[in-house]
Figure: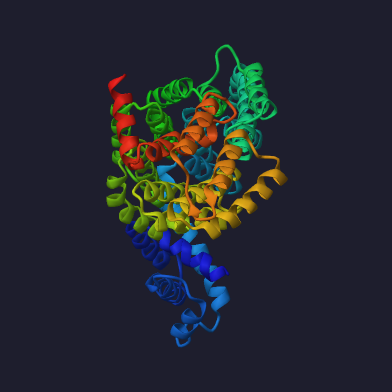
Length: 512
């Protein structure tokens, strides 16, 4: 519904944006329109959650209700106009558009000298921010201006300048465009395949890297360098060894931090890249680097709601991941309420993958803390929301992980039913890889007449099979999502999964 979209937009506004809207609405509308827009704005703002019937009941007597459809459209228009005006000076691209639009207005009024000043300013901003596409548009506008004003000397100066820059501009634009397309393809492949578990799947990543290498210039522009590193990021993320990936991510951050102008205009991309780097540090057990980079994320200034939401996501996601990898499930339990509150508060603006990530972390963390009912709730959330909010690789994991939860709870009926369903699913999808088959076979033997269970000998045999698969490059994804070997060890040694993981983490730290 249009109302709910308008409601969602209003809920994203900061206090200063709301104040600016009220001021802007009063200055740019008649008294009547300002009053109606302000009243309708307040009606939406007061509602904690949008309810269409409740909204109608509460506002039937309001002056805006008679022409509600047109009043909503007008309010949306005014909000967007006020936001554009409020943020214009904080965004170089928006400012370039402002100068171009101003040029057109002044040009139509034959105010050529003032119009030229706006184009010169737009050109400088475009060069500063590396927006090559705008440079072409501005030169075209300058040509039009000098042609109509009859300024042949300025026309000659512009043509000489364009001739000098032409080859570099065309080449830069071509390379940046092609590399951007490969970036998008790399993202698509990473979402479609995830961790490649066949040679054919891995070749898709290799082809993309080769394509980018063939395009790359000996002296690439700043933007080209970032694109090349981003494509390499997707490529190296498909390997089990995460050290090369970590180095690529460090290089990206170092390059970006050396360019203050880029950081000012692309703070969100920088925040995303910090998140990626912490993930690499965590995977490699680099505890000090994790904490230092997490501090950068925490200190990152929020320019808007999107950055506030992302900061919340990245901090809790990374903190929980770090605690889980260290086996500190007791500490996870103290953070879960805060993380769940944030999920409720910001969840409406989450990308589906972030919702998936929190569901996965909650299910893993509660499992490690032996809170199996809570773990079951969250793993079911992963399964129920497939495919709209769950990647196939996580769905496949959840179909296996839920069997472990049923095993721990002793739910023989549900285990038997889901085991048959999982076997059918994996065979039909042709996704029954060795580790999945090993776990499914084990669960089949665990279904005994007297209930769910396994002998020490059966666990030892399961561990042997898991260890054989651990170094296979096509089995790494499932190993990255859960520490299967530590779970089996906890059964063999008759101790907690948490204790085994903590001891393992401490040995890894001591061995570095």
